[in-house]
Length: 249
Image (cartoon, rainbow, N blue to C red; front, side):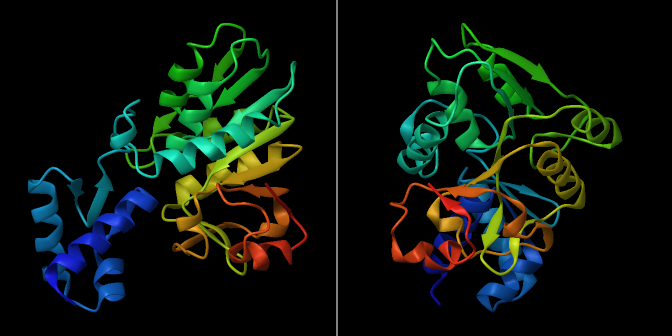
């Protein structure tokens, strides 16, 4: 594989999953850890990602922008956001996680909508506060530097005290056999609590995340109600998910 191709693949992985682990990349691309370390440094020097110990973070994930070119898969995420919003009704209690797709939901909410949002994401909460007719409740705690959401025992406790009508859950990896997956256990724990608390749960994922698996399982897909992607629900790519008898939007 040429270096240019390798750098392109690394950047794609970072943008899709927001965080990548150096050892995972070296295994996937069949090169040494030192090679990946140099690649990450070069991409960081070019201001294309943020290099951290043992891996890298997506630059676009660190600060939300309304500029289309600054958000990876902007058009796809906007389509998902519009589908999610179509499910909302006045007086709902809505639990929403972090990530750029959920931020897009917050940004394009119809001004007349009257719902109460609960979120563990500070950036999502700040965007929701701009909405004129909806209320926002932020569940705070220690902030995860990679996922940008509140984590810890206090967060889990508060999630156990609410019963949202619907939860929009951002995902890192999603696969028909392996379910929803993440990289960090503290994120897994929060997302499990969100799922347990909610009457209905829909995973939000651009199609590039389909059939991807991270290190730690959040839940099987049988434990959620549906998936929202930018694809037409009848797209052949979604066939394995239809077989699970969950709703595809």
